[in-house]
Length: 158
Image 1 (tube, rainbow, N blue to C red):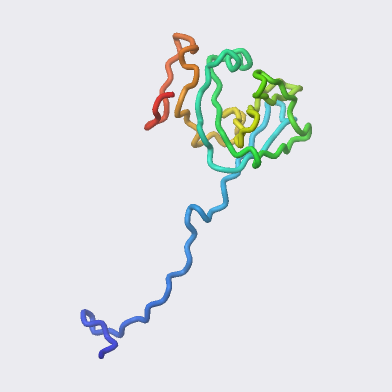
Image 2 (tube, rainbow, N blue to C red):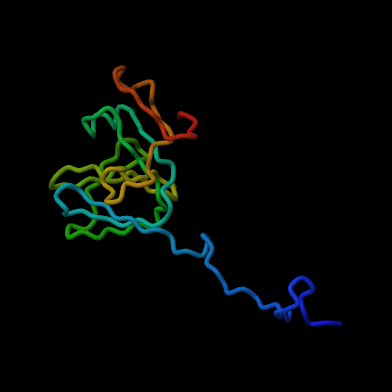
């Protein structure tokens, strides 16, 4: 038996395993940071943004003073408060939902539902706002009639 490649007439190369390559699942999860307007309350979250959506419920419009709030989810256990003032002040808008805001500048930062494994952060409190295009719009029926929303491609509309 010949140890040459029949097509090229050159010696065959012994099969060697390819070097290990990183897959997307091996890569460390992305880390994002965010903060309030005055910088006293800041945070870090880890993971891929989940469920970016607009909300036009009565609580969001009243708290924000705008027609909707952009929310983006991250694993709750990845949330770390990193600013000089530590954790935000909390306000419950439902018996099972509390929202964190800066007591100095009033910036609304996070929302946490009881027994949820996710923390929702306000999209525009994030330092890096890439990849958070809204896929849905909750309480759309409450939105002001002049508001036109174009959701991210491939979304179901919410």
